[in-house]
Image 1 (tube, helix red, strand yellow):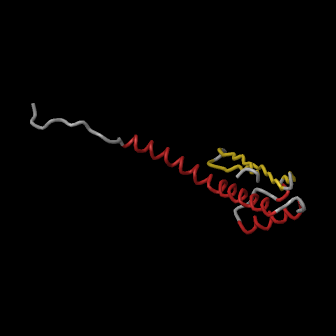
Image 2 (cartoon, rainbow, N blue to C red):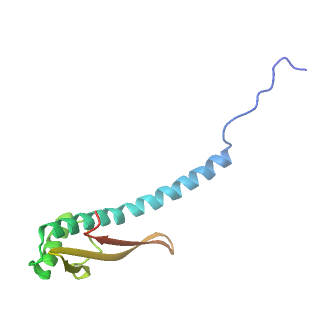
Image 3 (cartoon, rainbow, N blue to C red):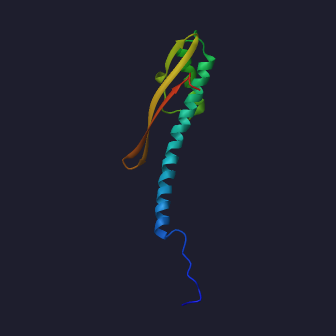
Length: 124
């Protein structure tokens, strides 16, 4: 019998570290590809909310669409949504703006992500 007692080894093996690194790399790739889509979503949500607050039942739809177009140019992150995608309705003296769109983001090869967004000015 040896005087040195055996201790249990703890930690990750090289193969398990590589597996963890691959999973983390895939998660990072997906996150980096999703950030621009969500940046656009929050920009559209902000623009639609401001337009609905500034508009009243007398504001013409074309003025609202032009306002969206100008603000989208300033934001520079709105690339998928066009002013013609806005659905504008007047309810109880308030303007309600709704817009729905999809954004497809390529990952690797033929694999891609599809984001479906919906913004409604009455939801805050």
